Image (cartoon, rainbow, N blue to C red; front, side, top):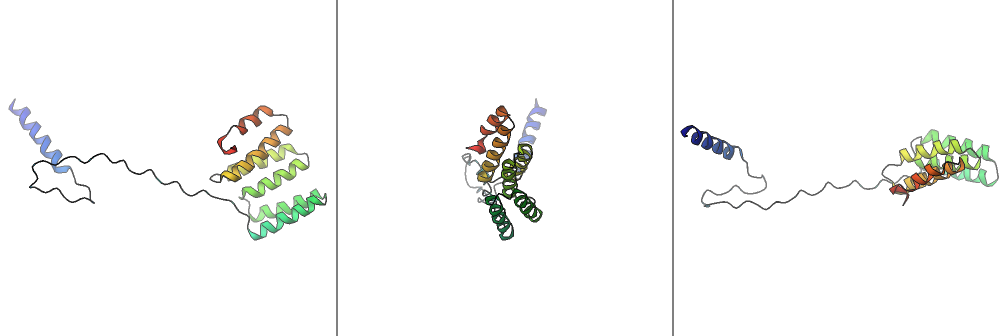
Length: 161
């Protein structure tokens, strides 16, 4: 019995000795008869990083405008070449992949449009607007291939709202 009392007292003393006061609060005074436990205060949730927005650089913006001019004239091969140049400048810009995918749809190449849409969607993480644009391209490409069920699944994704 004495052994149990000694062990219990030792455990309590060791536990009290290792417990530290929070660094931003004053140390408890020894004159206080009993310290009240502080109420539970949850830590603030981590702040979400600001949403990322994709933009075109001035050089790629100029090339996209040139591509649009070619498309308006019906010169799809020249538009394709111009967008390829833009992608060599900014290969990880999802907006360029969306532009190229839209062009591929205009050329009736839905399979390549799908590839561009998937690439754009993968690169657009953190940018809801660009994700939505990439999703719409992907839906259009899948529908053009007769893959309506897959298109409906993409449409049900949160980024499509």
